[in-house]
Image 1 (cartoon, rainbow, N blue to C red):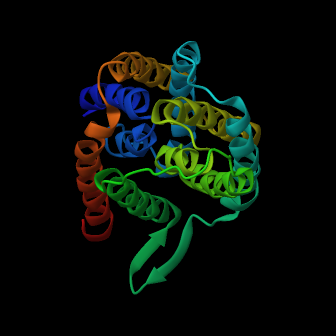
Image 2: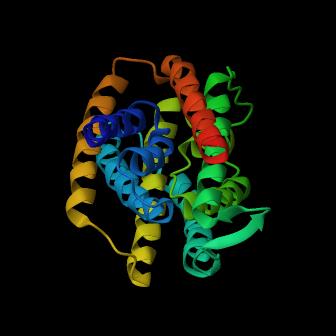
Length: 261
């Protein structure tokens, strides 16, 4: 299973480089089911892997002129606040065992995976659904951009997911960025959010296997290089529905595995 996990780690980077999101949605299932890592610790690992991979993509997109720093900061600053609130204040106070239903134990790890499965299915539907972006104004709505940034920070903080499937639509509709600039700017936001979240975990003393973490991050980095190169030749929008169906199936699998198996 570990060998499959290493191979699957390439897809994390390819997805982030090609469509600016989706990679973080894959990271948690890969860590939990293929590498047998505890879901709570997997959220920390995911922050590092996704952040490191997104940084490499940022550099490539910066060279292509696809980064909009001002929009990224208006989005990222509220995100950072909510990430720190979740990971440093709320998350540590959630009990390992939440409650019992008859003889069935509802644990913190179970809650993480169930919420993550729901998030995966929501992300999948947003990828599958065909939408035509109609920009009616060239003015950026920074207030709404900041509000969505705060919401995405909650998702990142609780699940260790970058939230690219929420970031890109926000950048398209409220920052009025073209698709390629939205992808590049999304990667910058994901890097900022993930690195701050991981730094917070280090501050709390979360145990980290750096050898494993750097190996997976390196593999995902190779995938990011591949995805960024492919983005110059392939329209990521055409691949989103296919990737969306894949994510939907995985979400349903996680939900059924956690509830029934």
